[in-house]
Amino acid sequence: MMIHQSNPIRVMLIDDHRSVLWGLERLIDGEKPRMEVVGTATSQAEALAAIPQAAPDVILLDLDLGGESGVNAIPDFLARSKARVLILTGVRDPAKHDSAVLAGACGVVTKEDTAETILKAIEKAYHGELWLDRAATGRIFVELSRRNSSDRKDPNQQKISALTARERQIVIEMASDAGATTRSVAEKMCISRLQPPRALGLRQQARPHEALGLADPQRMNGRSNK
Image (cartoon, rainbow, N blue to C red; front, side, top):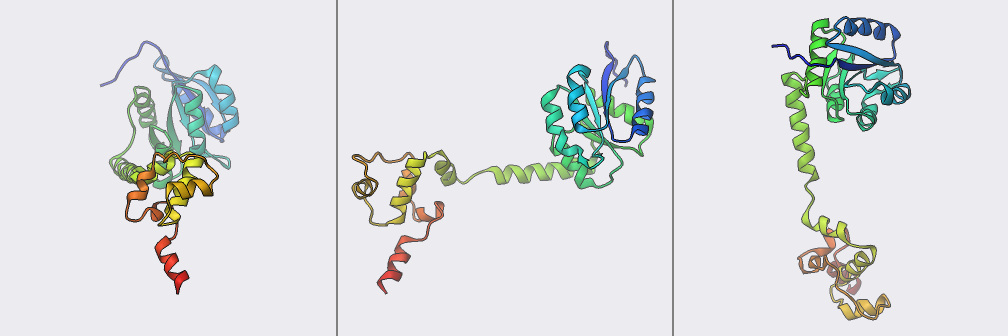
């Protein structure tokens, strides 16, 4: 079922081949008043300069901009406008398609797709929908799950990240010496009064040196006594 909107969909075209831009512009402008081309560009810099005035709803972007990566340009386009980025490419590599979607594109159509498919993808993108086939959806889901899993930091590492530089130094001193006390560390660091760091809970663990990337002080002491 076709969704009708009161205002035309404003489309910006970014491709390093002017012949492609010419053909796309005629295809899309032929759909007025449903959609219209509000700007064209052959490079990332040209596109970034034109976006504020063009105010596109959808950016139709090629992955290869004459040596420039369209994938790398996606975050800048999204930051400069409220447009949805839809990839139109002749590149067949699924990995590059996935990279574009993971960078923020809402879908991928190929230059081999029919004119009807390209127009439908533009409209779906405008209405906030993804344009992905089942295989791509599966691959991206797996990759996002993998990234989310790797982003879950170990609680100890989260504590370490929260330390100030001074606190980190205190924890390192205490974790490096199994017999260290707050008083001895304070004297060594020329501190009149040692305030235990927020993450000093690391000291109570079986192997605090491992969390801090240090050698086992007991093993080091054992070696020195041999």
